[in-house]
Length: 63
Image 1 (cartoon, rainbow, N blue to C red):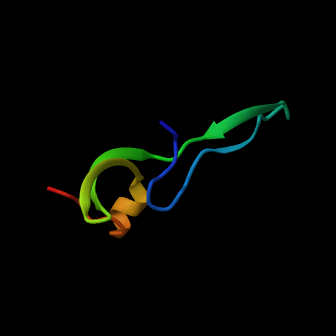
Image 2: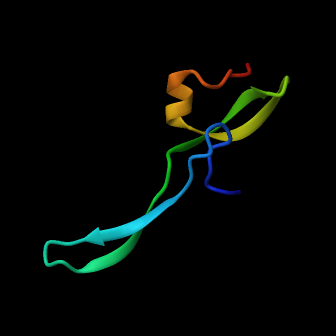
């Protein structure tokens, strides 16, 4: 399963962690994905959705 939001497409971001002594190491930022049941194309489906999409009301929850 990909670490990507099914609604907005938000995914993994890579970058560099910089310590106080200026040692640079690679790191990964992962979106906060929740596996919820939503109405997608008129049918209920279980998909991974980021919490910002859930809070903003971009998805219609299936009960």
